Length: 451
Image (tube, rainbow, N blue to C red; front, side, top):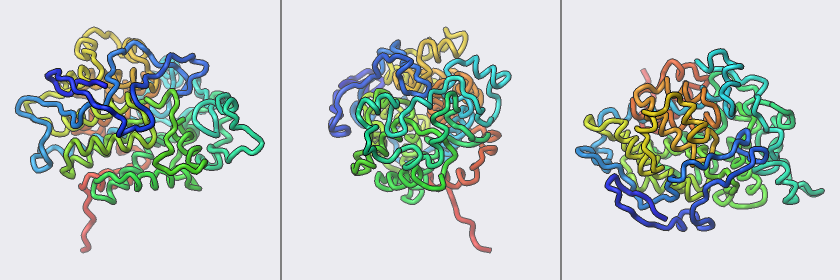
């Protein structure tokens, strides 16, 4: 397993068995029939991006720039570091909420038809979703209902329904109706389930002073998804959630409940990574240790070597943006990351593209699969490197797995610009609680003193 481990092009080799002992090697998604895929509306992964680095590489992976070595401890943090971290996490939630009403719309013209001029602000989820195939998804495990039947899950002595009885209690009734919106009933400014998982993680980070605790997260995750009444507003749970709880119901230990499907290497696995990186680095922990925490966290729900490789690059990118000096541009860092992690020239692509839809949904798939989602969001980050608001609106209007792609994009550009699109952030339904959770996780929250 090989990976560019520095900007100089030096190659390093490392095995990933210690991270994912039951699954070695690359696991790029196979070519899939749109009628049988299970990522959102079922659009299959683009296979145009053959350069995606399928490894985690040697840890730590640093982005080294002249006068700005990304290895400094917290004692050398630049003055903007806390503001950058806070903005990154705030922008993550903004991106998710902006994209929510058109999440998994695979024809951008459907967005134009339902929202005149496209998404311009926070909106509620429409009743009708033109691309939804939620009715085909299994309520007993990850994947499709047909796949569940073929594995004999639908027997006379079948276990509890995962959707409705274990998680998403009271929501199963929406799963059997064609074209039901994945986020049925969610209001403008609501966040999706994966963003609520980030909130659960933030609360555990806040309780530990910014240090990642795998068991604490698992407890918080299980509590969040099984609570009755629900602690989140969503109607849909991705395949990885359903697979995790099917394995938990079968008696597996929580840290051994990850389910592997063809869409395991997906951008949704990276949504919560920024919280671990930013909290850990502000706490003063070394990047290598933080990257290892990210891989341990990823393995709980998305055990895939290709995704692990991207995860390490993503952590290094956030670190570089968090600690960058005045002499290093955001675009310089993005160019280096695009070459090292996905082997493409993002600046050239951005210069040639006349429209974002030529790239997202054209060169790279707009679906969840990491081989298209990761380079696609790097393109958007480069294209809108100094304008997070424009980037997050563009992301929403491109459709596909826009919530999860947008969450990662938002974290990158929030950190890069130290700004969080406050007009949208302040309109999030839970923004007060979010601010407390983010600031506590980052060590910025101070309890009011008694007068």
